[in-house]
Image (cartoon, rainbow, N blue to C red):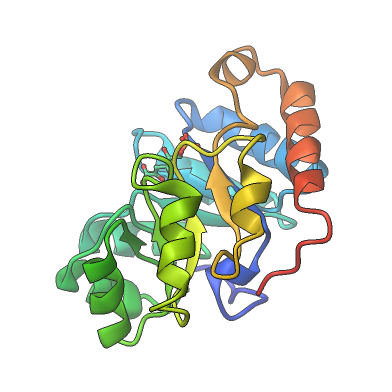
Length: 216
Ligand SMILES: O=C(O)C(=O)C[C@H](O)[C@H](O)COP(=O)(O)O
């Protein structure tokens, strides 16, 4: 079981959250250390691979400077499994009431995913103000989020999906965006080659993009 987050919400962890797909759990610790060394301590490990839960356990146990969470959480069973493995936070690409209740009951901060106005309103109705906006670029990007900030200023977002170094700062400049998620600092060829130096360099560049951005 993970220790509590140092902040109340996932959105206040860091301006840039790397989204990681880990094929080999043996890569988890060096990869996490490279991200932390580059200035990106909040790490979302997606549950897209069989190695993901073990990767979360390894990072939680061996990289104390990292704050590791689970992404692609879509069932109550996964919530239980990743929290037992040490996940500090939960992220889902979308949500249902069943999933929301499981995440709420987990005891760790969570970020349900939305891509439409009605989903945002439904979450607000359920007392949730902090959300992942996914898939960010495909669902309307910065123009969509800016439009939401008028009628729904109480909702805060972590857009993820299709964001890169060229667009991250534009998202971070929006009043309703607290952080952005993305995998651009983890190119597949670098991970396959276990080129952790390159990952660290890209992480440092990503962290610099958000210099001066304070979480809101
Ligand atoms: O599987 C999930 O639930 C996800 O977390 C999806 C990720 O947020 C995006 O795949 C990351 O987006 P890219 O930066 O475009 O790679």
